[in-house]
Amino acid sequence: MKTISILGCGWFGLAFAKKLVESGYDVKGSSTSPEKLSLLADEKIKPYLVNFTSEQIIADAEFFETDALFICIPPKRNSTELNSYPQKIEAILTASKHKAKQVILISSTSVYGDENQIVNEQSATLPDTDSGKVVLAAEEILKESLPHHFTIIRFAGLIGPNRNPGRFFAGKTDVPNGLAPVNLIHQTDAIGVASAILKKQAFGRIYNACSPDHPSKKAFYTAAAHTTGLIEPKFIEEKRDWKIVESLNVPEFLDYDFQVAL
Image 1 (cartoon, rainbow, N blue to C red):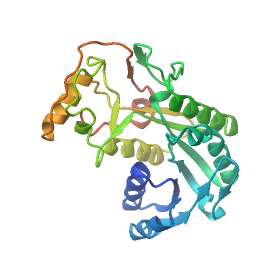
Image 2 (cartoon, one colour):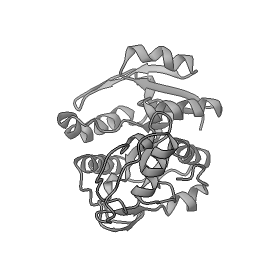
Image 3 (cartoon, rainbow, N blue to C red):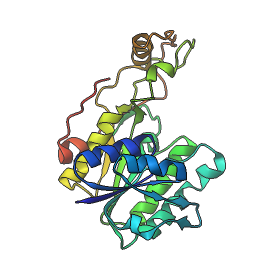
Image 4 (cartoon, rainbow, N blue to C red):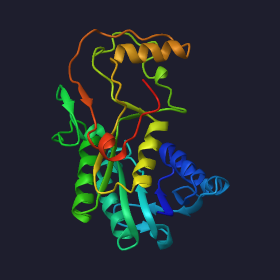
């Protein structure tokens, strides 16, 4: 594994790409914005302008010639963009066919609904949000395209630089479901899990990437607001519509130890 392509150098993708450069990989990074290409180049990431719709991809084919392609583009909240997300993933897979040796899709633990239980990679996927449904549809397209060597990383809620969780509920009152457990992962560990898959070449599986710590919403977000000097939120002490996301595959196949406690 020498050359890595990161499709989507956003909040996670850019941080991951920078870490890979530090680790000695040759990294290709994409952006839909011409203005961002110089930023990528400054970080020693080979920049590519890649624009795609559900119908076509406008990109240099060289971008997809890689040992591992990470697809790091979450579905957009706009309803039209949201619904076309699976077709975009399909177009990307078509463009990368016979070029990328491994394809890794960054997905989400939103594919599991809040069924009031513990879930892992062997659990049924019953999304109860629109974004969870389109992400699951994208996963199914990947599985159909690469039935024997698809790799999926399902990230829990991402926190870290410029995503201060203390701001999420600061100053709010009567926030529901205060006793429900949180499912989060810090950017450091998100990068750590993705890097471990590369290092161990542990492709061909689904990985739930979620902190093993699951404090209640009340405990976690109150502490986060307090730490950053924001007004502490007030939660309703109830536990309904919850899940705890666990991973069987991260400890078994990656032997990864989480760095950031919640």
